[in-house]
Image 1 (cartoon, rainbow, N blue to C red):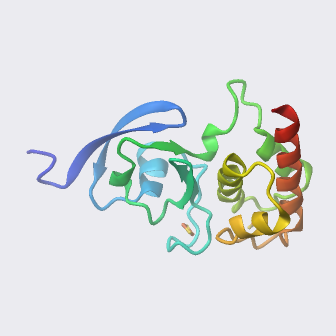
Image 2: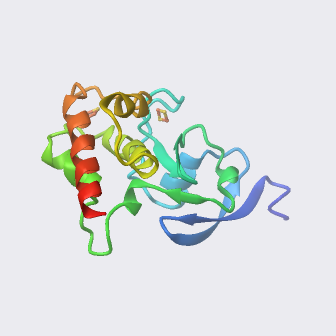
Image 3: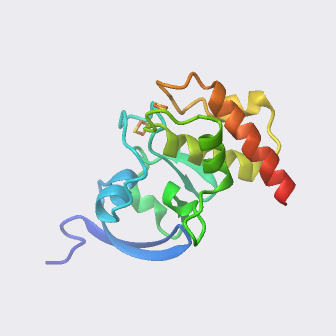
Length: 165
Ligand code: FES
Ligand code: FES
């Protein structure tokens, strides 16, 4: 049977710098494509309703809630997940290392989404004020840390990224 008739389409996009072509159900959200079809479970599902930010990934440079983002819409786009941040030797990125250094990870459930929001922020605005950091993280909820260490981690990562550029 024609896959289109049963609501399945093949799409191609760039995922963590690699071209992928996958079958997608028309009603599927990006989080399910990433976690279930592609096995990238670093992206977490919390509320499933766009409230907590645990599912944040980057699409064409913007942080998005993958639990609300239709999978079909990534056709031809660049998607980055937390799995795409380490280098070829599996070293943590500066943002990830800063979260470790500052104790900004406790249970860790919010961390992948938080870190992707930080990456989108620092890619667009390498020297953010504390107010800008707080605003960029408004959609990412953390039950554990109280946010202070997270803000410090972002400030450390921004400084280090600036020094290394
Ligand atoms: S799981 Fe997507 S915003 Fe909560
Ligand atoms: S570290 Fe537990 S929710 Fe943020």
